[in-house]
Length: 601
Image (tube, rainbow, N blue to C red; front, side, top):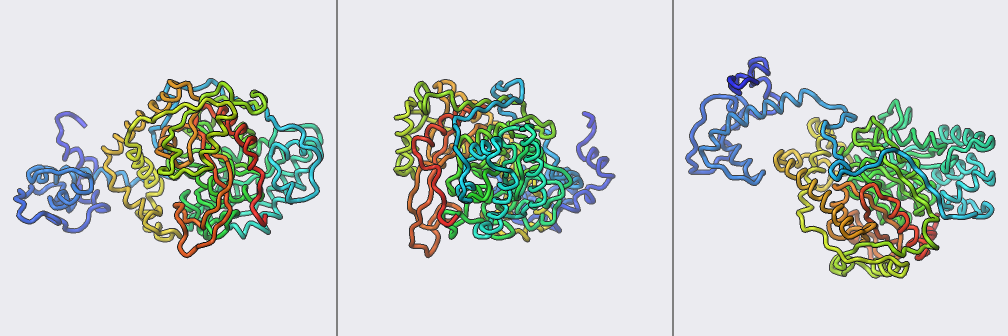
């Protein structure tokens, strides 16, 4: 646009001489003056883009309430044409509907914000688990064995992959319906992969620690020729042509895909088009989500491990509910190519397992760079379970805020006992305070990105076909997000930069390996998801509670108590998952509650 041309001339040239035509898809009918306050002396605007778009001063006055501003009558009159021209720009953009795999040009990179990274995508893992002895004859004992143990038996020839695969396919078929956690079984693929693994293992061509080990995928990861429906009725029958990056990676590692597992529709909650995924410890309640099936199936011994995703709690929350170990890696560590995009700057891929060292093994395979994901980074990962003396955490500093462990914050005795166990293990517990920032002000980023990812559902009305239609569900949330002001969204991104540097700065300044807290204490869940920092959630004990709703309230009409697991979360420095795994492993071994199984499974 040249400096001498008028804005209207530019727009009319751009849209073929007719602003009205460009606005047809956006503007309503005659809304001129609608909503004007009685007695408001408002000058009548001259005919122009605003009137062509059906925009009146009353619309602007009403809209001010939605964005938290207040203009004078003369300012509103002046705005009419400008708003009309902006609507024309929006109409132009809507003529282009992006495909789901097209990411925004701007890429969130917390490592660049901090000037932090590593030169290569390398992984090295040494587990502390020793010789587990002979494989058990009881199928249930075999089903609940850790990945580290299964790997040992497979490599030693004490167990075949095909036998293990048949065991899990049987459990998924028999027990899966009780949890409503299986979307699609993959028996043909699984058996072919298992036979290949057995042939290779017999010939001495071991691919690594996951060779021959079955696993389950959250059903938002593309699998070539196998339906991937994202948990949503709107995407049933969607069959991708290629595999997601992590599916490729696990196949290369020799792992065996036995099932696509449920998720809350479009990665929210535990309700999908097949119903609600249930918690194996109390099937009367949901497993939480959105990695609902991944957590439920792993907790019930239907798979040795599963892969989930987190945008804002979708690994942590179901891991808490089902008593599994959920590792949410740093943003950018695990590539997301071929995974459903909910929020490009927030989505993270991680393992859900039954032990901490299992999570380390799986992350060592998932960790790699893939240029098909613009946010993917080449990062080293190394974990050595022998690095510490019999579980000692001596010399390690771990931060906490006493307020997080108070009754007022919802903490319970199990949280405080876990904290004291860390102290007994030799960790130096350091009191900290997070910088006071409006962390909730980051949420418009999530809301806007999610609404953009599924704009087609909102504009077409297909959002009405989604199963979950509560006020807090996606359809209503997507509609509301269209009223987020663009300027406030940019300011939220600026706040985000401050949050990234503030949190990492605290950890570095105090010499902390990480923080420990109840999983939903303070702003940590929101803060670390937006900053990209890693987390590890693990079981620390059991408690008796009534059946719960998705938001952890008592379900109506339930008076009985159920023994369910309870967990705690560790939060770490960016790209430094290994210290969290070391701490988590020591705590897991000291507490000794990781191996208890849900009744009936």
